[in-house]
Length: 468
Image 1 (cartoon, helix red, strand yellow):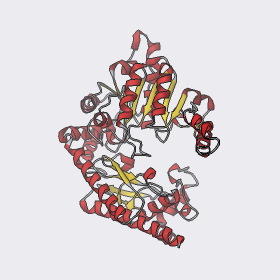
Image 2 (cartoon, helix red, strand yellow):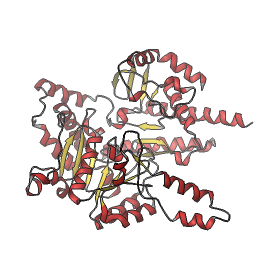
Image 3 (cartoon, helix red, strand yellow):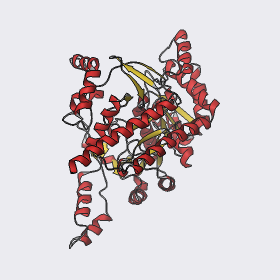
Image 4 (cartoon, helix red, strand yellow):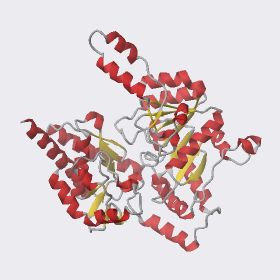
């Protein structure tokens, strides 16, 4: 580990100096390396990227990387594809008036409704804004306040979704495990059938009062479905990442279908957060892939073609609450606004991407999905053959180590990400996978696979030597 840290420190002197000098005025959230060890903490600064094109980025120290972060999944065609650059350049010549309606807005809306099957859309800037608005719309439609979210999900940084399960629930689970065998096994079984309903803020600065309207449940669990069914008359919405970016090995098709049945029975809004899965797994996203239609769906990342854009799409009976004078009076309209919403440059980029997706059809995603699945299969075959207890998974062109199926500690994952960076693979410290795009070549895929395999070999060689 020490050699990798020393190598990266030497390679990224410029980035480190930049971070140290910028700290005087810039509070940089991106510089935090989650799970950093006593050795890797010295790398707790972002590499400053000077240029990006296709599958590669270059930092200010002149290092070139194969990029698997790809804008945290925003790029399906790699960085700055020519057809997007041309569309943005054309709009730049026309200008980019703010607060005015521009001609392409209607065309982009039509393309998105055609691809997703959702009849109405509304544009905003970030995923957080889209989620915030979706929850507000669901509450307006149902006249209820409580929402359900799931542990391990990520829905942006609005207060309502920065929640975890209450401490009492963690205590219950510990007791179930502790008393599973022995004289207290009957109590363990009793507690195992129960769950503490509720939520607690997962960050300082969030009032505990907000948690009263949020319930956090385990994703994919039968118990969670029972809780939702019992509370359905009190719920405004259930918010779900169909496949969680933090746990992509869990792809619960049957769970989602039953969840849809329950929410329909209780007139509860079902919100799909498709920031990552939207337009990546299929032109129609996870809805099309799983065969489950939500009431509201949020998109971002790929939808903006690399520029800031998010989309709230939904059924008419929900989206009507965003329309002027909804329900016959101004007091029935959900408030939503933003100076930079429908920014002409973002709309131009989105128009280029949506037009490309329509032109290519599902075969575009199918090809990328197959390449990613083949890479993951080869990785898993090699790991199994070498007796390394690690498993990879993928959902479309998003691939990752399946932590729940692997014998890796957080320190191991942090070391592996540093090793990958040192090998010329760009990702964030602590990341355990990334994204393939149409810009990645076969040689890139081989280099990515080799770096992961070599890094995991080193980790387990070191573990095995310590045991001797």
